Image 1: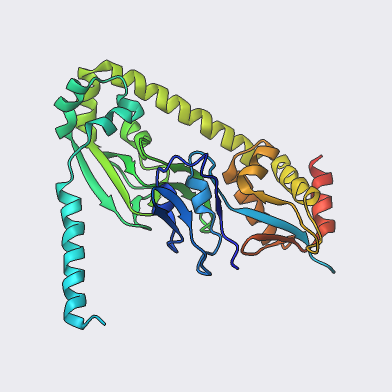
Image 2: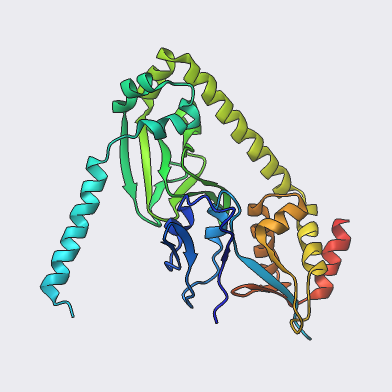
Length: 68
Length: 247
């Protein structure tokens, strides 16, 4: 399973900006719902999160400390 | 399987379609009314002035405005998203904002006659509306209410930029972002906290662009490593020192 950005459908206003900026085409519209498909091509650029005007689309980071 | 000639036909069709899109799209009055400059105009007035605007489609990565160049045309984003940024002499990029539909890209050089202070690049397929500088100036004389709205837009942008300058100028923002990283760091074995850059920005009381810059700076200094969806702290002691120094 590939970790992918997540979408909150309640916050999403279907403006389509995330779809227009996604370079790996992982974000598509299915039955008028913004849907994210798994792909290893997603490099977590977070541009989809940056353009989302409602905060519906999020790219979270796990923060870990590397063992020395 | 498609043979070469069929692929050529499809490509030709696509190029024609792109050309058609560039040249035949019409100006949408409803959208014009949603542009902050023109919200005070009624539909009849907008119908009368819409012929002054042109429409243009640009592709992902295309540079719409280049820092240092002169502008004789004002661009508005009609669809898609545009990155507005500055580049340092060393080639480092600082994103100032993401322009979304309704926003103007280059009003500063249009009004002061100087060079573009920023560059703007399409983040995906973008449709732009544009109006020539002299046509806009005539419109403002004919409809002073446009000038009043324009001053509100420029004042809002000035406020946003002042806040950004404040954040970028003072080192304590780096300290706040660093502190957030340390507070939310796990060892990678159990379920750890997940944070978005937007959430970190809200916690640090700053803009998302400043968080992105802080993370990049910490990575350049060798304190953290940015992986696909992970921030790996490689030098915890140095991060603790940054937090102490900024306190």
